Image 1 (tube, rainbow, N blue to C red):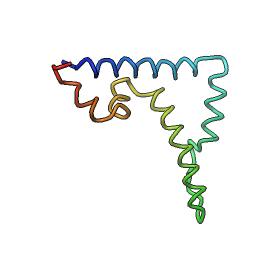
Image 2: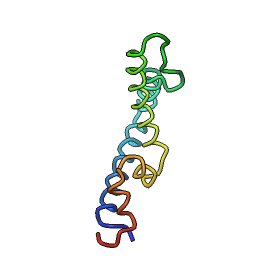
Image 3: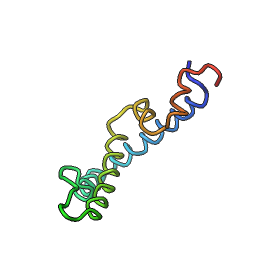
Length: 97
């Protein structure tokens, strides 16, 4: 049985995922998602040969894109594994909640 702490974190993750989805479903949601895909280099490399600093900035943008995609496409339980941290995830099967 999951601990109370884990269940509360999972509820929060469900709400956060829902918030991402609601924003995408808005009338202009697809427009901002398409714009972010271009800005975050969703479909191209972030590496600029010879320019380490610029490559790292672009990789940071891509990390934002991946977070958005995770919230749109993964289950709340999968998001917990990625974002909640080991201390919360370790409590999933802890009966002391």
